[in-house]
Amino acid sequence: MDNKIKIYESLLNEKAALEKECFECSLEYARKFGDEIQSLFELKVEAVTLKKKISFCVKKQYVSEKIYAFELDRYIDEEILEYQKRLQVLIEYNNAARENKGEPLTFEDVKKIKKLYYEIAHLIHPDLHPEYKNDEEMLGLWNKAVSAYKCNDYKLLVEAYDQIIIKVKDSDVCIKDIDSKIEVIQDEIENIKENEPYTYKFLLDSDIEINEFHQKLELEIKDYQKYISSLKKELNKFDIVLEGCEA
Image (cartoon, rainbow, N blue to C red; front, side):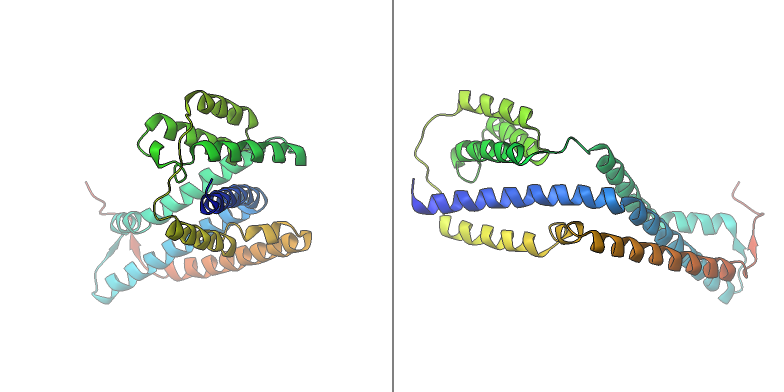
């Protein structure tokens, strides 16, 4: 095999390993801090809602118009729709993280999974084997292998490997524009290492850092609770008419 192809294959494997680590870090981060982050985001949504209500009331008051509750509610429903969607995604992710605990893996388990994944990547990785680019069956098997690797599912990985071995055929490997592809994937690897969720690992590896972050989140939650209390007092100053609702 050409030396550049070996370098490219090595980089693809490194990127896959980093993405797997990111996935695991993200789950662990959600398990440790998910409830607090969710509570904090809920408070932020409530604060935004109250601020928008106050802004609506100020505008109505400025033009000497009555503030009807049904108009206010309709306005808020439209304004915070995107926030509610983001909150729902956060809730669903936290629930999935709690359910996806799995069994602890030994060093040998991890080594075995990684070795088999690399064998599969060598055989059918789409960037290494452009001949499979439009082969839906092979792409499906590749996606199955990637998913199994990320989730540490050795049994599923073996199943994918067996299916691949039956179908794969020896062929000469030719990677077009390999120099630029190597450069791109090197940049992608550096970007992964410099950003979340990969950087969560430095927090999650330290009990001191974990405790400090818990304290930071708790303090921020308390601050938002106080802020929301003050916003509610501000909103209560307005005369919001409950009657005259839509027919």
